[in-house]
Image 1: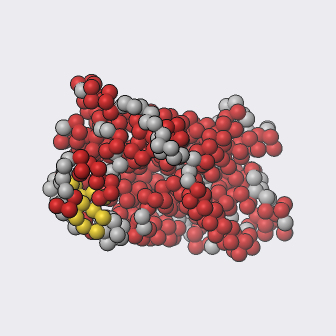
Image 2: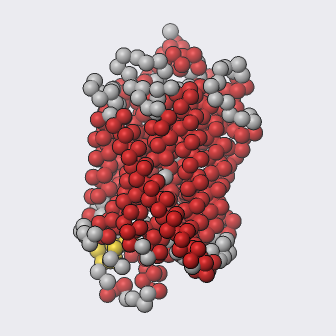
Image 3: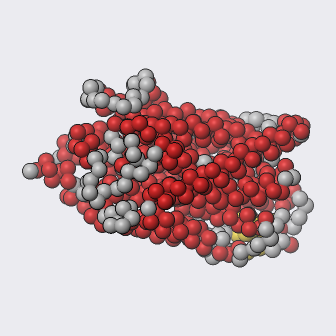
Length: 512
C-alpha cells in the first residue's frame, strides 16, 4: 500500500510526454513572454495592496526587511524550480516535480495545495483590483454604487472623495477631526466589479494562451511604468522633505505590542508570511512549461529573471511608501495611490491607479492560467476526471478547466471576505516551495547522472535553506490558518482515495 502511494513517474516517461503531440497545447511562449508572465503575477497584489497592510498591521517601516526575507527565500526556491522546469518541461509545476521525486500521494497533496493557492489567490487579487478600479473612477469623478463594490456586510464610508472600508480609515477620519456618522455610508451587498473582472479574464484564457500572454505583456508594461513613476515621484518627495521621511521612518522597527506578529522582529516575520502571497509568479511560470518554445533554456530565464526584477522593485517601493506616508495610515485598499496623493501630484495618482488596475488584472490572469494548467495535468494523470484535460479544438486551450475554475473564483470574489484568506493562500504556496526544494535534493541523490540543462548551485545547501525559510514563514502564520489548511488537505485526501487513487494511470500501468 505504502509503496503504491509513493510510486513515482519515470523521468524518461515525463520527457517523452513533453514532446509535441497532435491535439496538445501550443508551444508559443518565448523568454520575454515567460518573464512578463512572472512579472505579471509578482508585481501586483504585493506592491499595490499587501505592502501597505503588512506595514500598518505587522512590521511598520521594517516591512522592507520582510520583503528582503521573502526575496531570499524565494531566490533559493526559484533556483530549485529552475532546475526542475528545465529538466521536466511539463505543465503542472510543483505537482509534476513531486510526482517525479516523492511519489503520487505527495504530488496529489501539493497539487491540491496549488488549487487553493491559485483559486483563492485570484479571488483575493480581484478584491484588490476592485478597490483600485473604484479609486481610478473616483479620480474622474465617476461613482459606482458602493454596495456593489464590496462583499456582503462590509461597512463603507465616503472619505476624501473615495469609498473605503470604514474600519480601515476610521483612525484617519478621527485624526482629521471629523465625525464618521456625518459622512455618507453604505453596506456592501456583493462585489459585482470583482465578479465581472474574473469572468472577463476567464473568457480571455479560453480564447488562447498566446492572446492571454500578449494581453499580460501589455499590462506588465503599464503597471511597471506606473511603479517606476511612483518611485520617481516618491523619491523626489523624500529628497525635498527629508524631515517628513525621517519622522515616518522612525521608529524603523516599531516596538512589539506584546503579542506575536504585532511589530518587532516577530512582526517582520508575520509581515513576510503575509506578503509571500506576492511571490508566486515564478511558480505560475513553471505551469506553462509545455507551452514554451524552448523550455530547457527559457524556463530558467523566465523564473529567475522575473524574481530578480520584482524583488528589487518591491524593496524600493516599500521603503519609499513608508517614507512618504505614516505606516499607520496604509491599511487601505489602495496604499500606493495614497502614497502618490501624499506627494500632491494628481496625475501621478491617476497613472498609479491605471497601473494597479492593469497590474492586478494581469495577476488574476496568470493565477487562473496556472490553475487551469494544474487541473489539465492532474486530469492527464487520471487523478481528476477527463473533462479537466479536454483541449478546445480551435483555441488549443484547456477550456473546460478554465471555465470550471473561473466561475467559482468569480463567485468567491463577489461574496466572500477574501482578504481574510490571503494567509491561507500563502500556506499553500509555501508548502509547494518546501516540496520543490526537497525534491531537487532527492532527485540529485537518486539520479545524479541525469542531464540537467540548468543546475541548482550548492546542492544540498540551497534546497535546505529554501525549505527551512519556507517552513519558518509557515510557522509565522496564525493557528487558524493552519487549521483551515489541514481541513482543506483532509478534504483533498478524501477526493484522492475516493477517485484519484482508483483512476490513476500510473497505478493502472503498474498493474499491467
